[in-house]
Image 1: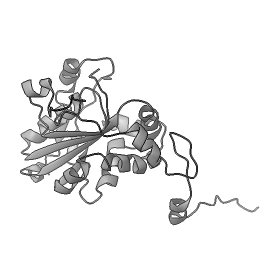
Image 2: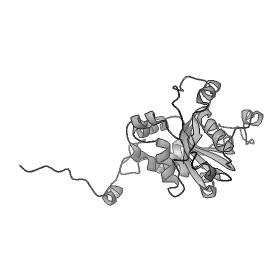
Image 3: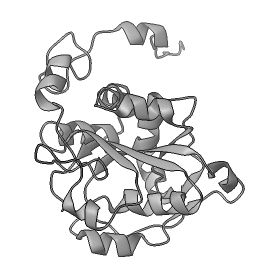
Image 4: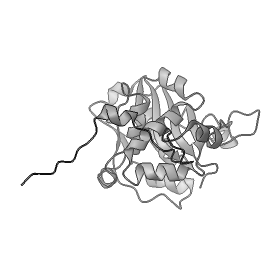
Amino acid sequence: MLKRWAVRPFPSLLARLPSQCAVCRAWPSEPVCDACVARFAPPVRRCSTCALPLVPGSTQCGDCLRDPPPLDACLAACAYVWPWPQCIAEFKFRGDPGRAAPLATLLRSAPWVEPALEAADLVLPMPLAPARLRERGFNQAHELARRLDPARCDPGLLLRSRETAPQSGLDRGERLRGLRGSFALDPLRAEQLRGRRLVLVDDVMTTGASLHAAGQVLRAGGAAHITAIVLARTDRPG
């Protein structure tokens, strides 16, 4: 009996195949077309350390002025509003890591992200807990980070040291308390952090609790400068 073999195109051929825009369904197109990026991810004045929208003429929000975060800078490509929640959900919850490339391009095109990457010594993805990683099959932050800067991406230095309860529905204070002790540095490599400039990458920033908890660990480990860059930011903490 003849065996039936599945025929798969070579990667170089796949790279040349046309695709459809996930937002407007234009075809042929990039997975997210330039017109949709211009329409749905326009540059917005944001707080330099938490990426919340600001009124013209200011650089930091009142909360960051009163209680400075452990991040030196925080940059967001877009607000977490339609169509980006759907695109991000398809990326990380429906087993489609291939969407990381166009989303990383969107992230890289945001104001000040390119200079932050050029100045960084290391690009660190926010880690997932082992159980969540097994369930999902990949870490969405790592997929973004390695496409932003594959040479400096280091997924093994910052670790998720324990599982945490679901964070949705909790306010920022409750999230911070729940995240205590949930991040750590690889003890065999922690010295590599001292005096380094870091970029910390995540997909969505809601209250900032996770990024701040990770930032505190990196700061305690001797990081000289920490810039968080996120694909999408909720306009108001929730």
